[in-house]
Structures are given as C-alpha cells and as structure tokens.
Image (cartoon, rainbow, N blue to C red; front, side):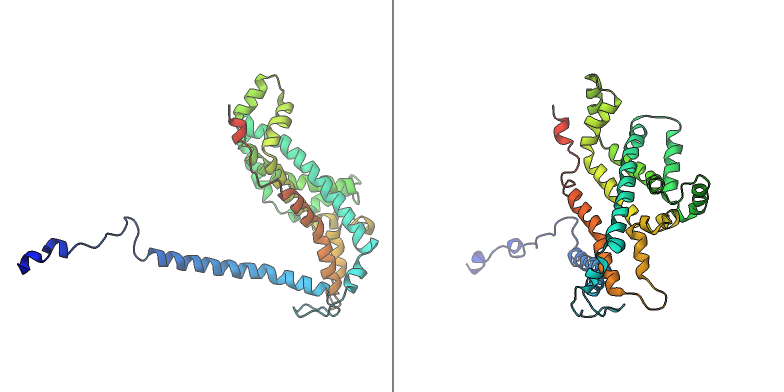
Length: 300
C-alpha cells in the first residue's frame, strides 16, 4: 500500500525546463558589461567637450580669468568691453553677409547640380561624382596660394562679393554630394505623375522634389553655414581691410604671444560669436523631426 501511494519514478524526476534556444546563460551579463563599457567611453568623450565649454562660460564672467579652469569672480565687464561696433557687431555682420550669401549660393547650385546627377544616366556621371568626392577631401590651404595670386591678377582681392563666391565654390562639392544623397530618396514615380500632368523639369524640381527633401536641404544649409562661419583662413587671405573682416578673423585680435591674452574678453566674444550658429540650428532643426514625408505622397 505504501508503494501504491508513492508517485512514479518518471514523475518524481521531471526534467528541468530547457533554456530558450539561441540564448546562452552568460550572454546577458556580457551584454550588460559591454553596454556599461560603451557608456563609460561616451562619458569620457562628453567630458572632453564639456570641460572647454565650462571654461569658456566661467572665464566670460571672471574678472581675472586665465587659461586654468577655476571658480569665477563674477563680473559683466568682459561682455561690456567686447560689445561694441568695431570689436563685435561689425565683424559679426560681415560674417553673416559672407556666410549667409555663400550658403545661399551653395545650396541653390547644389540643388541644380544634384538633380541631373540623381535622375539622368550618362557615361560621364560616375567620373564626375568621383571628382566631386575627391574635391570634398581636398584641403583648402593647398589651393589658397594660387587662388590669392589669381585674385590679385584680376583685382578681386579685398572684395566681399568675390570672397563670398569663393566660399560658396569651396563648399559646393560637399553640398552637391550630400544633396544628391538626399535626392536619391525621392521616388521617381512622383515626378512621372507630375510630368504626365504637363509639368516641366523646373516645376517638378520646385513643386515635387524640394518639398519632399526639405530636411535634406536644411541639413546641407546647416552644415554649409557652420563650415563657412568657422572658416578663418579664406577671409584672412582674401580680405585685407579691417572693416571687412568677419568675426572668425577678428577673434585673432584677442590672442597674444607674450602671455597678454585677455581670456575673459576672448571667452565673452566666443559666446557672442556662437550665437548665430546656435540660433540657426534651433530655428531649422525643428523642421527635421518629420523626415521625408513620402508616405502620404505614395498613397493612391
């Protein structure tokens, strides 16, 4: 009777549940350790960017700022000394004219050049794209001596429009390459439908392609403007008059080789100098959230 009440041997020794297939027991701890290591590396890289920004903010309100990061002796004299027409306002206005005009020319020419490269096939298309790719990596300092000689010979040295054209031309290869990449994502069927309705190439580009690739145009605009805004070498070589120099060159006046650098004024000027780029990014970045609005265009 005692044996009859006891469970069978097979039921008493039931096998343990098997682990899900493809999941090793130690994979989750290893994945967690790898994620922790990546986060630590990102924190270190972030600190390398944050510390100079903290120094700039602290030095801009410090009456005795130096190259060392320290607790500031709060004052607003640094900003009051740099916020005048000759030091800040006119150089920033010159920079806005140079970089704004160059960015506008670069974006317009990039759109007009990227459209045929994206839509039409030719034997010269691939060599031309490779040439553009090569010129994007060409350092600007490698061609400034012949460019300066050419500007002197044609009497365009110290000319704001000529410097604007050269800035636009130097940024054009990168703009064309990036604009073509965005334009390739616009479906050709939409253009065929517009062409069936009687639209010409410019109408299709303006009314169909550009509205769908608006985020791409904004990205090219931001990158082009930032690259021109921080360009020191080109305006320093091509512009000679002090009243025509942009802010990227006038910041050089705060530096000294004999330990006489006004770090507080330099930091205050750097903060004011960064305002146009930050404003441009905040204004245009709000339009990047939606991405390419192709879903609704392809329905029906």
